[in-house]
Image (cartoon, rainbow, N blue to C red; front, side, top):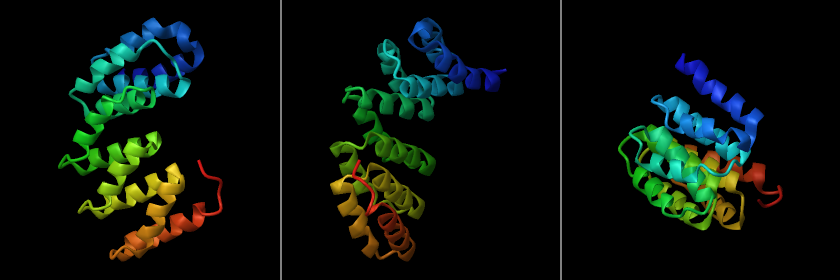
Length: 176
């Protein structure tokens, strides 16, 4: 069963670590996108190395969740060319895809990600703008705080309220 398999890959990787790399590479090439996406997630979580070339291939995957996970993993591991994949996906007409990219950018949290997130604050979809605010709160560095603080004056009352709430939550916490 694919659902079981996509869950078991995480259990397997957590138990085997780098010694299970051949099985993980096989899972990265599995026919089911959930298995491929979950495999990338657990490789990132467990900081397993040796699969990068196979994950690079996933930037061309037909399934967007797989592509987003692969790009996030690769950018976090120094493959800046994968950032282009995220940037291209951020202009998709699919709201859920833009939301996934915003989550990934918040996880990456570097200067380039902050630049894209700042631009996404102009997205016509309120939900996307709210996700951007959450990403800035997660990044929680000086620049992210400045942008979040400025968003408390957003003309959209909901965006302004959420920005203010997130600002209050992080303003006294240590910078990330």
